[in-house]
Image (cartoon, rainbow, N blue to C red; front, side, top):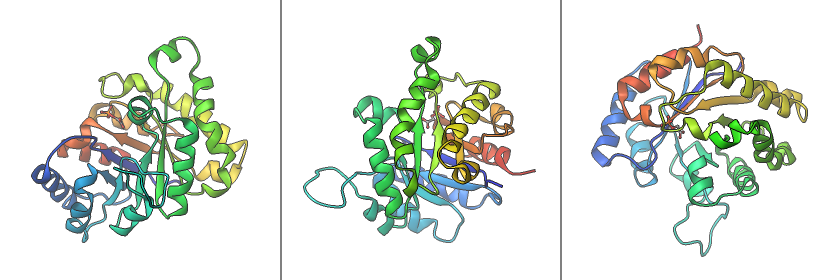
Length: 248
Ligand code: PGA
């Protein structure tokens, strides 16, 4: 049985007061049965982890650097994240791929480094609308996961997030059937390399998940939860999504 996970990606939103208020509200909610992870802006991460020390929330970053230390201005290492109590990190989000030109090779390398440091990497993959309409979804995803599959030996415990780029922040969601089809295909690609790992691989769906569509999406066999952007900033919406992920 894979434990459901709901991760909130706050992106570049909020401030110190709103972040604290959001965490306080989540702390008092019943999240039993679901791994709930918060990925706030990095500048608030350590403070929020300390604030939530009594609760069952997990915390992660939205990115991580490849290097352990050195002259890499602006970067943060996996060990630093561990040092302040983070347990996870998002890697390869489509916004990092798009605005920071992150390649799938770099994403796989970051994934390996983060996992080796004891962080749980949440690796994002997904196609653009143009790619989907051209019938190239599987080909694109294949390119994105190929470097990961090469490294699979060291990747026990990674989480995959399927996030169609056309569904992120657009209000357009993949239908539950569309998402399930891709999730099942992704799992089969991992199964071809490592059957045991594929069965335990948590695969999240991301892209305009909201309270109104979460239950339908999470009911799919190969969908193990969600990576939530916009709706993770609204306590009631995020908690409704967490509730939809609870095992029956
Ligand atoms: P969204 O973002 O829920 O706002 O579409 C999801 C994501 O980018 O992880």
